[in-house]
Length: 77
Length: 268
Image (cartoon, rainbow over all chains, first blue to last red; front, side):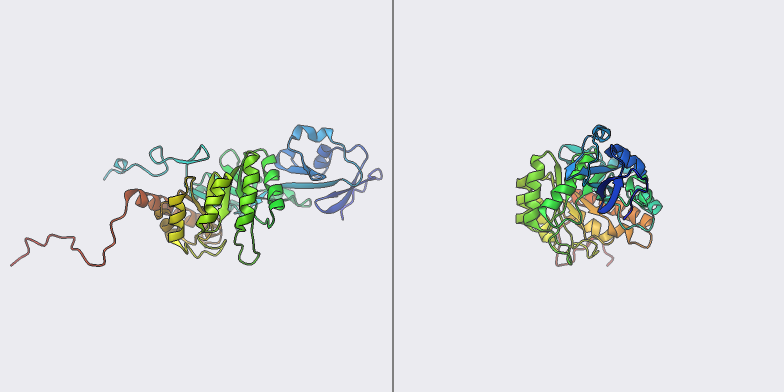
């Protein structure tokens, strides 16, 4: 749905069910920053692997076809 | 009268310990369905709860700042207990529990495997299986279940640190439908019993605690009250009153009247 408008956004991803694209070399940490998300308040699942160690987020480069789920805590009982 | 002669429930004289961790309040509350985040925070504060439950959901990438509960609740003030609400399969439940743990606050999970969309009643088989797997992974599992003794026993055997039988269906506000079943579960299990779901008003909470259970978890009873903050205060008092009444030991029920005043010394 929402696609990055930058001309070098050539890496297609699925983020929370929506199609997106990022520039080559974009890391998980950079993706979160571009979405204005605080990495300390979200959890990322990358191709069904939960990224428990937040220090690794800047080290993981996104590849074409990657599927990401970005979750957080919401009100619940 | 001085109140200091009576040991207060919820203090060192009446410790509330689950899985080796001591908790300050026997009332645990959810964070869902409030009319506003401000009202939620004020109600939770009035409830005196230490444990607050939260759910795991996708970030809405268009308006994330308004949805995350941690933008409103200080995680250093409360013990965050993530639930697996909305999960209908063991696989989904494990995924949500692991995502919640990766948030980095603690290893605890309020495990729910729902068996039916209409009644929201728990799938006991699935809950037992998920409990076994997560307990082996080091999770502290508090398992939501039916008011069924056998399921409760199996959950304890599977490694749950607390078992959470329902008073009545989630969000129903019907109060405790089967006090005998709740008492039986409490009597037979060694782990703490936290009644979860179904409490509608303060008297419901008080009666639940009078069964001798260790605590109560509620959400809708506060969030859907006309005045959630006042109801939260009422629930705090009700849980303490019910706990104290249980510790005090009630008088025997009698089918006949017994006079409270002397039957001698009456005027001739």
